[in-house]
Image (cartoon, rainbow, N blue to C red; front, side, top):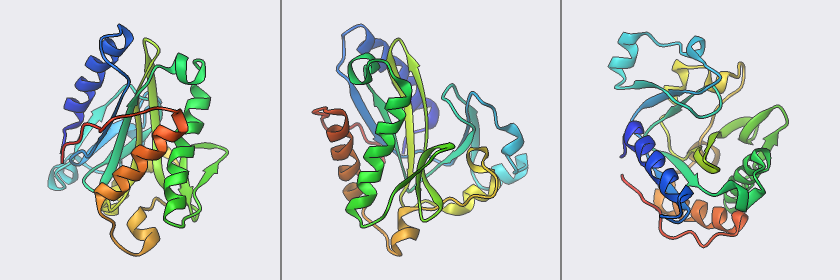
Length: 211
């Protein structure tokens, strides 16, 4: 389990090293403790919990520099931070990069017999009308930061304390809810890593993982 701030600091250090040619492109796959993050679009009004409720649930709130609104990170959720040279991978096209992230996760869902979908108005991955993966990114020095949050066996009650991604009236779900059974996180992690590597044409090595 890696704190959000520790992962953010690691990303910033690696971005600088990748941009200067000191480190290769990297994929970080990890889990965070209970954390609500607010993106550059804001989202304070979509935090429904009081300070006392957050304390009782063991959750913290972090204002971050990724795109998007408020979302939740926590145990049982696979968070992916691809740190890639966007100029090499998509010619600098951020929108194409977002679509490729979605494609990789849609392929993962397909491996479990689930129909992953895009919503024209929203970035992210949906299944059976509910959002199963949120995406929010930033590009610094031409290198991608932040990434996606894929609900595997997440405690979905934490989403009740926010309007997820600022989207009213839409459900969020998890792979466990969709399949009706739990899945070993290492199996899902392997599928995510493999599909990201295939979509981006990368020989991504073993990710940095902290449980």
